[in-house]
Length: 425
Image 1 (spheres, one colour):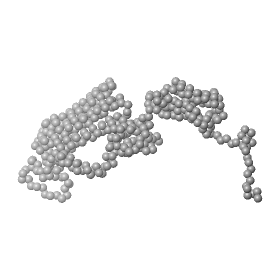
Image 2: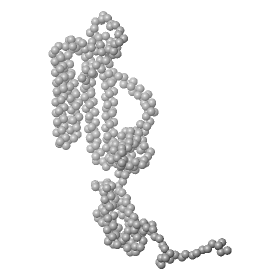
Image 3: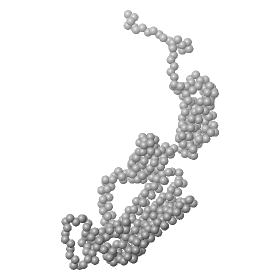
Image 4: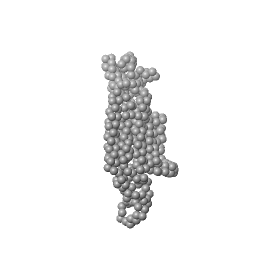
């Protein structure tokens, strides 16, 4: 079905409106004008007139050759396609993914190329008029070009696979975004180049005039697409400065979520609520971005309020207990950071009690260390402190209010009655 359609397009494109078929007599009278005829009927009549000798002059053997050529091309294409895919699966099972992808992506274009070869062989037995033969050759060449373009389009995946192997060794996940954008750009470039090549070489389009027109239209388009240009520069800013990467948790403009996609125009962030937020990339050029995933550690501060009636030696014991707990090997391992060692001090007389402050940093980024392991580590520290304080009979205070009464013998209040001077008179 593809070949007859392309033949019709090429014939309609190449024939002038007033062309006279070579097979018609020179003295043939012009058909009377018909105001009710269907638009484009003249072109259809010319196509039928040009293809008419093909059916009248071609022998049965010629049609059989065309049929066998088409069927042979289809069968050979199907067989080769199956063989290439089976061989690709065999290479994939051996771990040769790149080689497997080459044969996998070549199966479809190879099938089209063999069908085109069968068509070319079949047309050898068919009579073609002088006006039709160049068009048939163009059709065959067009199908070969489409097969080559299809194969090159598929080869972009091989570049993507190779670059992903290289970027897998890097520490940042933003390189994966660069590879994705590069793959899209290469495919768009190939589509544009092959479209222009086919339009110029097979349909006679004036590409120079098109490019000149694009220069004039580019100014109008750029004025109408300022936001799109800003978003494109925002994408370049994200790729160059790398404020975040795929899978990073960020806080931007009050939104907290994980980056799922970075595109040419916008990026998608999955919020903690589960909603998907789409942010234009130009917003990242003038906004503050907080990358939570990029932090090397999580800081934690514990404030322990000890009852005010605790003796000083008990308070010193409480400070020592907390320091010893943070120094235990299993506790100290994740918080062993060179420039941020754990600190424990009796730092102030608080409203709820005598305050002991303990601060340390929990290192993340290593295997098994994330936000939830940090929570589990903090829970273990809390339980150890509670059990140690209970064993040492050190009471952890809670917010209270003390009311002093005048009858309290330890805290007597002096109450003096003051009479108004005016009432003495």
